[in-house]
Length: 214
Image (cartoon, rainbow, N blue to C red; front, side):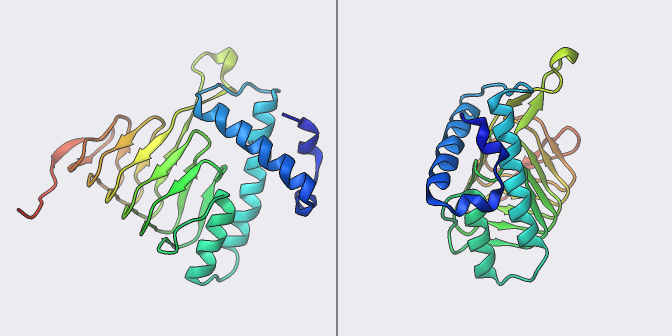
């Protein structure tokens, strides 16, 4: 990665050649995150993480500080993620993400207000998923060794189709939530959730199966 890009002002990225460099460096960063590579302070990987975070802050501020139509919010989320977001997606601001470029959103997804996504490690949200108010989804851990505490370790979160995550829940790095599952409000999800069950509590535990029509 070319760290000189970190010193450029974001508006300069409307120049085609700089956009190509930014896109290439972003792809390199995401490949390293998806491979689970640790980002150590002072490295190119950590610098690119910071650059992408600042770009996400800029775009989220644009989303959150003025009224946008539902269609404009879809367009803004496409800019935040760097990929086309389905027209059926709906979001109620405010919303923040620490990166945006490793976030993948399915069809007919709804994200309620106050949600905070940390997607550097990879966050996939399946079709028809519902994410309640103030949900936090994290994909980065810090090293437990105090000497390496400032480093970050990526682990992806995968949310299946038709999942419902209740208000104020927290989903921790490395978790997969199976299709049709429900996470109760205020739960802290530390382990994988099987399909079609309801979990709740801190840490989240199985409460019962989802009732389904025969």
